[in-house]
Length: 107
Image 1: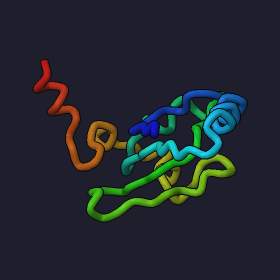
Image 2: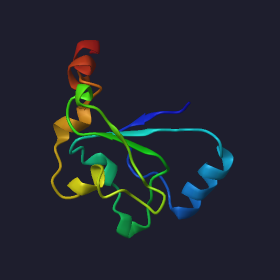
Image 3: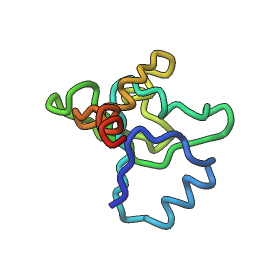
Image 4: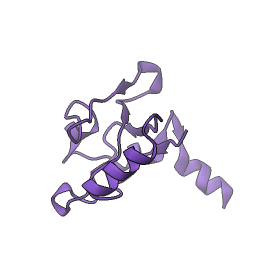
């Protein structure tokens, strides 16, 4: 299983379709957290799209998560509801782990 965290949009509509065709019966969660701004990049206006399926959690993982309905693009009840209101700290914190501290510790 391929799992990504805070992934940006990585291709266009054809890429997304191709990816789903290569892995038709596989679940590849695209985990998003809170107001992470990176999943909104590059802009959709530039013809970029996400691959399916987004798994979104608002705050602490203990509060639960939601498997989003992104069959027709992005689910406005998941990370897409924070299109403008981003928080960089949400990009470096996934599964309640502050990865900025981990990276600094590895230096």
